[in-house]
Length: 292
Image 1 (cartoon, rainbow, N blue to C red):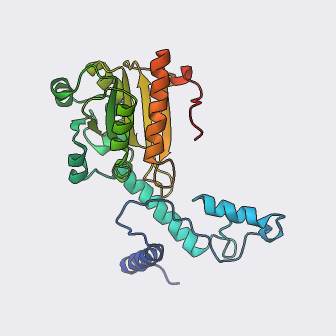
Image 2 (cartoon, rainbow, N blue to C red):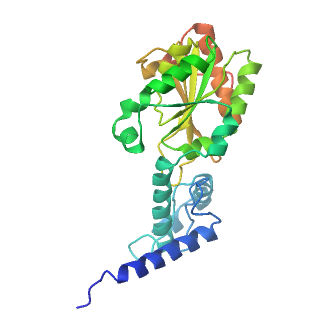
Image 3 (cartoon, helix red, strand yellow):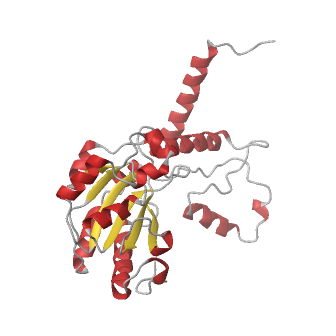
C-alpha cells in the first residue's frame, strides 16, 4: 500500500501554494499585503438545497452583496467547494498574520507621535500576559513625563493592539480626529503611539498627563480576512483601573465598515456629551445628534 513519504511534502506544499496564489491573484489580492476585506466568494457550484425554492431569492442575492460573510456558497458533494475552502484557509492565515504584524517605520514617522512601549517586551508576552500591555515600561513612562502634553482636554493615543495593520490601513483616522476635535473646541496634545498596547494603557497615560479624556485607537482582534479593523475607546476622567462601563467604544472602523470620517465625528459627539454631563460610558446613553 502506498504511503506518503517526506520527499512528497515539498512538492505538495508547492502545489498548495500555487493554488492559493492563483485564487488570490484572480481576486486581485496580493498574499503579502494586509487584506482590505474578506474575499468570500459567491460560488457558481451547486446551490445549497432549498435556495432555489425561496419565495424571495432576490433578497438572498442582496444579502450576499451586502456582507463579506459566506452565504449560499454552494457545495461540492457534501463539502465546501475547493475555492471556498482555500479562501477560508487564506483568510485564517491573514488573521493570524495581522496579530503578529508590525507597523512600518514610515507610518510611525508620519504620525509625529511620541513613541512609547508597554511592559510586554515581545509578542509572546503580550498575548499570554495581557496585564503587561496595560502599563508602560519604565523608559516610556519617563519619556511620557518629559515629552507629553499636559492638562489637555483629549489625549489621542494610537496603538497596534491585536493588528498593527489596522492602524496603518486606517491612517487617515488621526488627521480626521484632530480636525474634528479642533472644530468642537477640544484641546488635544501631541499624539502618542504605544507598541504592544492594551486598552487600559490609556488610563495610565491620561492620569500621568492630567487629561480630561483619553481616546485610544487600536487594532481589533481579527476575524477571517478582517485584520484591517480598528476600534476607538473613549474615557472621560480617566483613572487607573477604570471600569469599562465608564468607557465608550466605536468599532469596525475599516474600508468596508465605519469610515474614519464618521468614526471621528461620532467620537467627538460622545466627548461633547461627556463634557456636558461630566461622565462617560453608560451615563451618556444614546447619542441623538446623528443617525449612524
